[in-house]
Length: 197
Image 1 (spheres, rainbow, N blue to C red):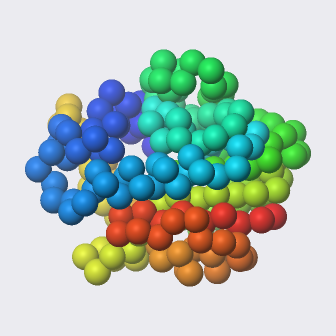
Image 2 (tube, rainbow, N blue to C red; image 1 turned 90 degrees about the horizontal axis):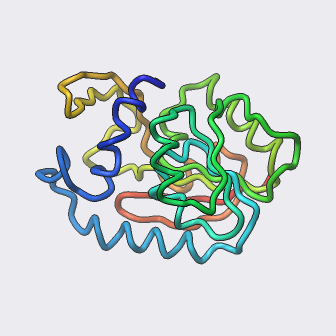
Image 3 (cartoon, rainbow, N blue to C red; image 1 turned 120 degrees about the vertical axis):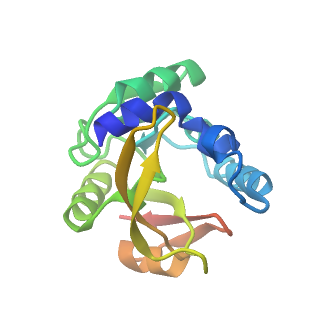
């Protein structure tokens, strides 16, 4: 998937902004609910945070405290560094985090966990729990017009086509999978939960 995200980097923020290929997509109240999610994340207690799969840093900037972003894509990281010059950014593997035990207070990940299948999910959770006592996951909400999991075809601006695994969540299902915790946000487009080690 590294090649997919390297290729997508220059257009990745179109998804958040509703521009480019996303300009014609009907997403009722998207902007208002995205701002609501951002405000909710900004209200978390400040912490030494590792944002895994930080991408361009679009959502990373909403996290309070001392921020380290990690992504496998150098193209994504180049954009994140521009967006958050005060942050620290590391190229690395989310399934083998290049940090010692308990390096952070919190691990966050946004729109990443839902792309992980079985064994990779377990590896990521073990790594996240190893480096921080708290995990915050933000991902796509399960809605009436989505399947709980699917293979999606993604078409990029250059015309390339990619198949991506995707899951959608309710907060209850996500918390059960993580072994408990608290709901941070429960909206039409996004869910966010906080789970202790």
